Length: 223
Image 1 (cartoon, rainbow, N blue to C red):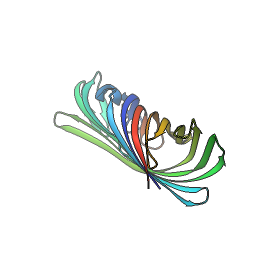
Image 2: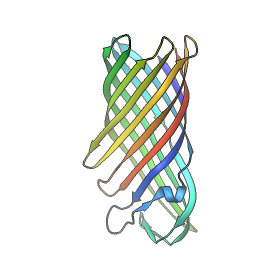
Image 3: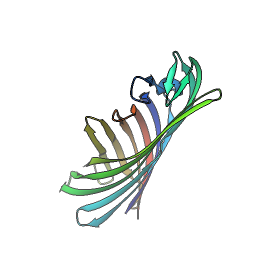
Image 4: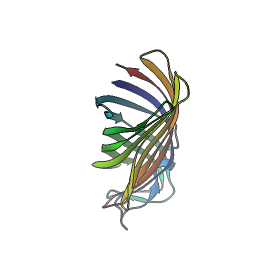
């Protein structure tokens, strides 16, 4: 069993929003209101073997941003009209995941695992201007494909890739990380890396596509 704690600094590359996703809603860049960051983004992961070559992985990944900026045009959002000028915004995208993965290849240098992830997203966008506030919340289930790769450099260090992702005509979701990991002792390892979180939906009444780039650091503890 391995417990992992990650601290990330996340930057918004883009965050395009329209609610509702029709002629009555205005598409705008939420990143231009809140700013590009960096924003603190923690992550917690627990993985455990359940049978030879079979493993379960659980992830809790909260993400919350807030800031103030300006609209350069009138914006219709979730039934409210916001005038050009100062506006405050909050964005939340919390992710909860459970993964089954299978080690399909392992040798002295490489390990590869493949599996499936069940993701629950809990998202919310809020705009405030004077006495006007409007909120759009969305909670939903997303199935993803999982892939893990590890390249051992020596008996104490390795490079790892880990990703969940899937795309369709209605949207996409990708969470990809690359790390350098080094063992501190028999039970603990430290890591540094990069992460990209990208995705969104254009189905139904909502439109939101965002991309975040992370620098990450953390610890792994083997129990």
